[in-house]
Image (cartoon, rainbow, N blue to C red; front, top):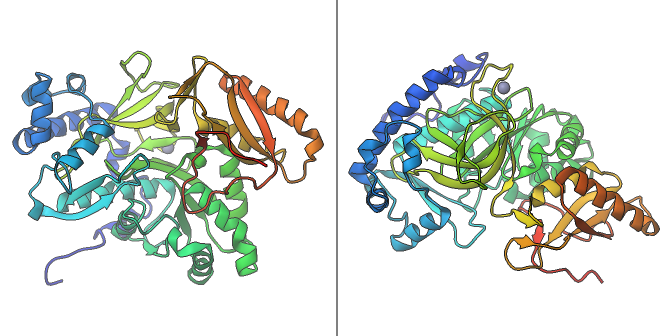
Length: 463
Ligand SMILES: [Zn+2]
């Protein structure tokens, strides 16, 4: 190796039987806090030296970098909103005013999906790239991927998304082998590669891996469960946390399904479910400080069992595109703070995006939560639904219009009964009043490689 380049971590195979990819995932919380605060102080010193963007932000708020020494001190720092990032990017292309490294030290970039406007671009130095590999490897290991595994790549490999190249790099770093077809390669090619290479694991968006399983018999002449896949790892959309979707994935693939969560601004993934399959652990507490914001009171609340709020992230070992108190928009619930696997990071479930949240007569309602209920009602429903938010903003005093596809075996004559059954379930589970319209199965587009928007801004023409 003439230049000392290394793609795989040299000790990857030593970790085959480890309890976690990094011993730090098992560290007691007082040790975690000590490391986090040490790295926070170092990150503040780095930003003071290198970031015009954060120097201006803290000066405007009358806060001194040197005064931020503890996790509680962070609350003095203003939050960085997605709009701040967007304005920064527009003001100084390509990586924004918040770029805090020399352009000559940037070795890689990625793009976000840009669901609200143009994509957001992040820059990575060599140290950032290695940190991303490490964060993702911890997630994949918790999810059940091991060095030596073949892994079918079912996320998009195009478009610059973090589900593409960074996934491939992290798998390589941890000693696994990426089968680089990508969702863009299409179901046909993915399934043929699956039959040819017999991967132990698949990664992809939950609705898409479900779609693949449903196509297996038609394309390959065998059931997905006969392809030898043992682990299906899902992320990028909420389905993995929806029991009905997860059960179908596990049944059709004959495999265990685990979920992970991340976001372009901080990395590929930093939360991941272990074998217990009941919530995603924070497995990267030495790289990210997480705060939980109660959107109603505006207060930071502790990660206690049952706590709900929006995640705020602070990167504490980032060079090129640092983030201080980044408002992620992920609305989560804390499921547990202890686990049989020994990991000490809290376990969460993502309920939805605060951007998607609707307020129906004062109740917070997430379209993904409605989707979850409708999915639980298979085969009475087809599992497919849309919310119609045909009002200004996010707040309505009326009943929320929800369109649900009836199950393929159900007669349209029974629609009235199904309508009231769903309305009751929604009222009991999510405490809001729905006005449900039943439509035929396959009225709406089924989830494929692309994410499907569950919310429509006007009532569709159903004739
Ligand atoms: Zn666990």
